[in-house]
Length: 134
Image (cartoon, rainbow, N blue to C red; front, side, top):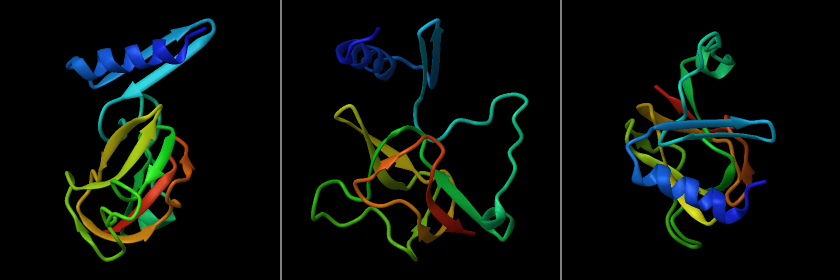
């Protein structure tokens, strides 16, 4: 079994490398780490738009499991609010994983139409964080 220190070391090695994605699978462990925006669907997976996307909006989903933060620090101004214009590289939030803060870029251009996650709440991989109108 991996300790917290083992996981920190794996993440440090990934951070220091040029890897964008790493998958480790053993009998007792499955670890999938993606740097930056959410990963593209794996081969065989269909990218089926949900009702909101079909109606002209896109979803910014959580690229990892962790704690969602709308601002850099408590009391600080949120990265984005409803009505804010974003570009693909605009940082929209932070997700904390094991005391490490990870910036999340929008990945799409448009206007923030909805904030789907609560500040300081645990989010799952793939969970909608924001809806963006084009």
